[in-house]
Length: 75
Image (cartoon, rainbow, N blue to C red):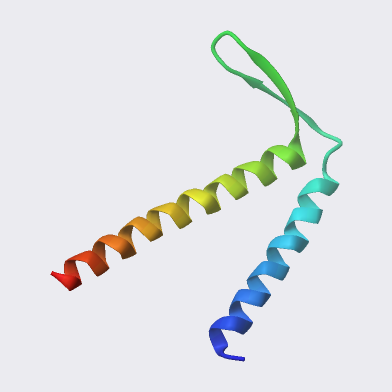
């Protein structure tokens, strides 16, 4: 097992642990007030979903960057 595989395994485990911690604080309710819509969310779900959306946005932007970089290298 290489260093990158071990680092990936550790990061996946840490994300899982933090997910359980965030879901443990579901007692608090947060009101999200959009312009004409008011929504009630549990705090743990809101934090976990924003964390996962941030990860997905980062992965998409990194993939675009690496594909553009590799395309320029091929030319």
